[in-house]
Amino acid sequence: MSAEMDAGLIAGLLSVTPGWAGLEETIGLEPDDTAMILAEAWRLGEDLLDPMAARADEEGCRIENGRLLTPEGYAEAFARLGADGWLAADLPESVGGQGLPTTLHAAASLGFEGAAMPFMMLAGSTRAAAHCLLAAAPDLAESWAPKLASGEWAATICISEPDAGSDVGRIRAKAEDRGDHWRITGQKCWISFGDQDMTSRIGHLCLARTGAPQEGTRGLTLFLVPDVLDDGSRNAIRLERIEEKLGLHGSPTCVLSFEGAEAQMLGEAGRGLPTLFRMIELMRLQTGCQGAGIALRSAALARRYAAERLQGGRPDAPPVPILAHPDVRRQLLDIESRAALLVALVLEAAVAADQARAGDPAAELRQAFLLPLAKNFGGEGAFETASGAVQVLGGAGYTREWPAERYLRDARIITIYEGTTGMQAQDFLVRRLLKDGGQSLGAFLQAARAELAEAPPGAEQATAILDRFEALARRLMASDASMAERLGQADGYLRAGYAALTALLATRLARVSDRGAAWARYRLHFADAELYAAETACALAPDLLAEAG
Image (cartoon, rainbow, N blue to C red; front, side, top):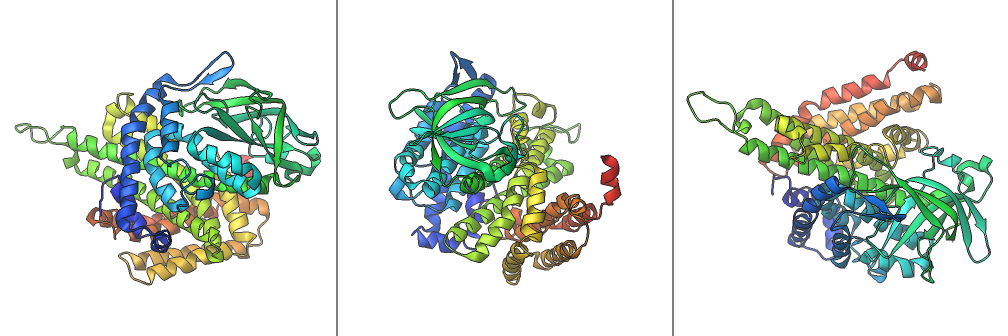
């Protein structure tokens, strides 16, 4: 199995992910078939998307005559992904997909996300919207899903407003019932690809208020708002502006004004958030894939540069590659092991998602446990590996001549959108531990201990980490602290969960290659310290937070 930061590593880690072999057998794939699919996706990312992403970062997006223009090559690349079946391979064949597992789609997407994360923002929302329509509005899905899967049409998710970001219950966009359709009025912001010139139609999945403001989230309903109506006329949606951002220059972040725009209700009135949840789940998994993809690219760049850059050595001899220096090797060990762990993490979460959709209740609980970790630490890990690549490249890494600084700028958003770190921490503590009585935790621990019982390298240390994490969780469950005090411990608990999960995943790295075994030893070397830091954060004195206010 490959130890390079490429499709070979992804295939190797997928092969040692529990549950994947059964999914692979169910769809009739052999391991060689899987490896070939992943290799082709990686090649397409390198040949088609990577060169385009560098140009798009320089060119950016712009508005002309009230419409948004995307960078050169975007329309052709999106059409290519759709025509080749990459956009929504995990949709049923009956609506334009290939019926493949979400796991395989996620694994293939790593090559795309790492090559051109800003461009792939539209692919992610389009695919997630197709799944949402299929679940909430099968009649609409018959016409929309095949067009979304083929890349002829695209979709966005419209939630945020100027005064309603994470606080979704404060949404004020209004929906008015007109009998055979609805009318939406209000402003939405932070809409990725809210307008574009890549497809002939855009469907906005928009949360709007059908109930009274005091009803909060229970007064919200989900709607499909097309930018072009069935008769070919434009809907009443106006592009106000696009944001100037640190990164994601190739992804237009739009402010849209809905001015009595015609819409169709999706699901039930007042059930907008539950209806949208399937889309949110998929997009949060995508953020983990974004992070893993960027981490792989950053690690590969750092190693390649370290092997080629000549510096140091004896003054009476030719200079040596900086890879020869112990500290550079240490840095590469850190970067590569982080990247490999992120790949293992998103594959683990994706397999749990597939098993949950197949009706496995334990997998559904594991998915609930894993998703906040994949979402948040995909982002943190991507930023850390990109920063590490900048460090290995030195002054060169700080220039635009090399993509390391672009990776770093693009990665910074991942822990912010689709739910900030704080929101993921609250979800992980409150919903995934306190409110479900530890069921999600128990499902994770049961599966992890069953895997470690097979005695992979590092199993004893990983088991000890799991035991400490469980003890911490039990203490938090038994605590009589106020909810405010518990929320102050949420970030620490989230990081403790990641420490426990990565200790488990590190044992898989050792089964991939000799270098993977070194990655595993390196990560496990720091596992105790990482968990101790998280445990310490959970013991933060409540009065400190009160004083900080």
